[in-house]
Length: 171
Image 1 (cartoon, rainbow, N blue to C red):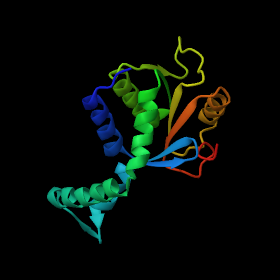
Image 2 (cartoon, helix red, strand yellow):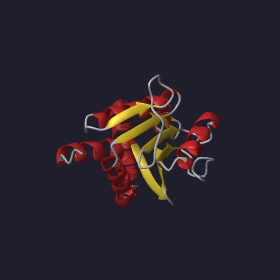
Image 3 (cartoon, one colour):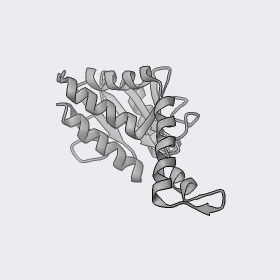
Image 4 (cartoon, rainbow, N blue to C red):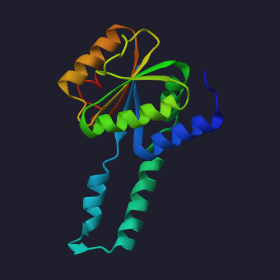
């Protein structure tokens, strides 16, 4: 098990920079900040187009508000779940899946065994393993089945989603 403080801090920074975290029961629920939504709001505020300097200022304010809204104990819970397991499974489709894979690469740099669900050679999930799911809606049927099966096998589950009231968020 790697206990490198710099690695943990780096992982925490990834989480804080990319997601807001909420804890619900034994499932960690994380809300993804919608960068494209922020960008669309910035480009045309009040009917006038903003120049790039103004856009950066507004984005900095919005990012600051997101940082302030993140509950530190929730970030800590996810980091602790990652650090206490040796095997992490990553699942997600499309862009959400790409975010999951980036997080998986970061975890592998901490010395964790990371598997992408659905890849050839991915072993069965076991009790004590962590499944990190990234799904914008939290309702993707295939991913919901994977979430349910992991739960039935005793794995800990982390859900990164834009919808805390989703099918997976309620599991």
